[in-house]
Amino acid sequence: MNILDIIENKKNGCELSKEEIEYFIEKYTKDEITDYQAAALIMAICINGMTQNEILDLTVSMANSGDMLDLSDISEHIVDKHSTGGVGDKVTLIVMPIIASLGIPVAKMSGRGLGITGGTIDKLESIPGYNVNIDIKEFKQNVKDIGISLMGQTLNLAPADKKIYALRDTISCTNSMPLIASSIMSKKIAAGANAIVLDVTCGSGAFMPDKEEARKLAKLMSLIGKNAGRETVCVLTNMDEPLGYAVGNSLEVIEAVNALKGNMADDVKEVILNLAMQMMKLSGKYPNMNENKAKIMEVIENGKALEKFKELIIKQNGDVSFIEDLEKFEKAPIIAPVLSEDDGLVEKLDAGKIGKAGVDLGIGRINKEDAIDSRVGITFEKKIGDEVKKGEVLAYVHGNSPEKVDKCVEEIRKAYKFGNKKIKKKNIIEII
Image 1 (tube, rainbow, N blue to C red):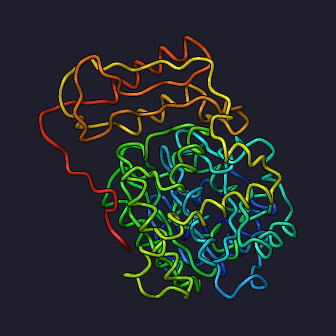
Image 2 (cartoon, rainbow, N blue to C red):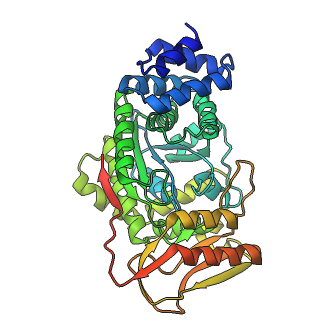
Image 3 (cartoon, rainbow, N blue to C red):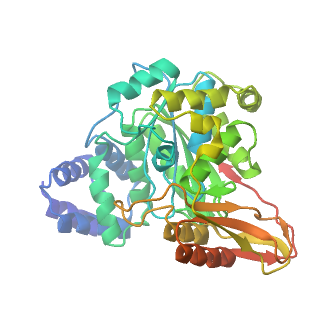
């Protein structure tokens, strides 16, 4: 067996065998196959697609290319949650303490933000002292001690995927459905959970802007998960406008803490409830979906979810006083209003444009090495469906330089569109 024959087979539209896929993944991970040979195979896959068997074999091979986290000593049922990304997505900070406060173990490794997609780890690091770089032994012990741990991706999970992902970006093969699905699921399988809830975002601020394409991706990832022995549920959520009222790392932590106190934006609440109810069901502890919503609201109202978040912060050396007094978070040196130049109802608040404006402001990264400023961000006063009068504040820009703030103000204005019709919003599109 050699790589040239494998490339030839896929170029001709043939189905690759499990052995051929395993050969490619093993040799490419060990640098025994060159980038230009891998690029040829990836391009052939992008053009000719893959069968379900091929996609499953590729996913499992990539998952097995590095470390496989074993969480069986914590619990028989570990439920993981993953989002395909979006603008203002602070869901993990809210839903995971809720789940842990219900007695379901939370052992989650999260990533940093890149581009318009925010990263949970960047948000957690805006809390002074919080340590995202704990080792696996401490990670697992924290879950055993308090039922929750959130850390960065320190393990060598699915290294083959990292190489293929980087290569796809350079040869314009990022939009291949088989490659997207196998990339996401290989990391989830390697992360050790035996049940997975996927928040598949779609809209202008998401990786998949088209609903039908997002639906196809969700169905494919659900199939991969089940075939790999992981019960998988996908929740399609709307990302046409930013989620909640804050975009930016410390601003989103503040919004998340307020949500755990019960002050939750409607769109955030709908997403949280649906994801949490699915996670509860998959845990095996809460099979009755009709009762799950009430249990979620109960741990928010009685303060148990917020207390669990505080326990997490203390356990990983964060300064919990910032959670107890949100005014302690350092504010950006410039806070400028975005004033409306129109009357009417907000018909559109383009999440993609907001995300790009946020990156320029310093919320996110263009390159992995870029520094971010946890203070900067955008807070919204008006969202889709709200009535606006000329001169009213649409949003506030929290920035660190006059030039960046002025540019962001103008970009935010462009993201708003006004009309005369009241828009009916739906944040949960479909459960798969």
